[in-house]
Image (cartoon, rainbow, N blue to C red; front, side, top):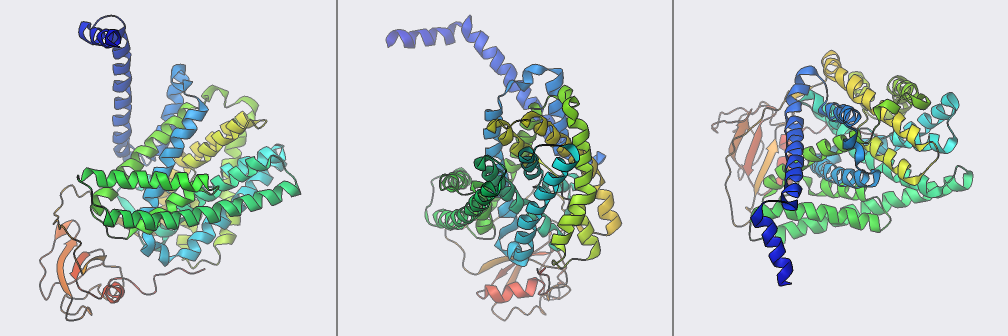
Length: 509
């Protein structure tokens, strides 16, 4: 034992030989990763000016780098799959928290209907086209259609930069993305587990799919409620531990959902919705931490997936042309027609309907599902994976690049979200009673009303009004405007919610 310790100390002290040969390559690797990360963060400004989504830069840049330096593509598919799975778990949990129960309640039927039915019809239509038009075997065609069915509106929000889609259109896009990712993954797992294409295996797929959905949702709701109680009732000795507790709690929920033979992704997304609007110690810090992690997860996912693609092999087997034709069919036929039929019962203006149907962009999930196909050893899996990459690249670059222009042409309501690097906060040892935070919705009773005219009751007191990142002096004649953030001290929270929200702002199915 003493000899081993002395040998280790000698290596560190001498600074020569094998210790230095180990440290220097590691230092170069850390430097390379840090530089890539810095460029990825700065690419958001570059992409905003060129109207190119950041994920497109990560994906295509990594694929080109892998072609120029083949050593970068040596990471195995199993490792990539595991890394991207963890990244997607973090992304979905953050997405659920951004939606929250309040926004989800404004469009529950529309979100679930579009997320589930829209995913299924896209998968079936794409599979039929891949089989009939390109001669792919039924099984690989169904797997390919399933992989290409989920959407990723995060790409849309990336290219819009500081502009955020207002109203139910944004809620519907975010909700569809969060709902159809678990749906597509559960369907893929069920298809791979069935092992064939027959009526008997079709029944197995339906049963497995339903089981994953039900168990995943149940674990997510129960796990979210338990995690919320844990956050509120168990204090920790340091502020930095609160966000880490929530992160590990989300990963526990994913693991439990998966081990219970349910959809772990649906579980974390549902848990995020449960926690979204709830108050808890250090909630703002927790939200910022998970938002940063989700951004990091998106960067890591697209770079890792891009490294698995061999650009030189894309023309082989017709993968490039099949992918381009499938991308065009998805953009101009399958989603507008088939998902358009699914969207008919949802109350939307014509411009909103067109925008939702065009912005069904593909992202990291289709490529992750492609790694599932590779891992399963399905015949023709490598060509299917190349096709998926081409479709995703076309979607994020071509479709994503047109989103700002289309948004302007259709008159989709946008609001500019300016960065707010400075904050003013007040800390309490106990949860403050009767303190509520609202955002004034356009057309709500508070929109255009003065503080004196607000129908809040005599016991309510408007303490702060934040407008465009600045504090507004609160006086009796201060007029509220749509988008204002208002802090109110009062006991009757349900009554106050009707004052600051618009009653008829709920899409129905």
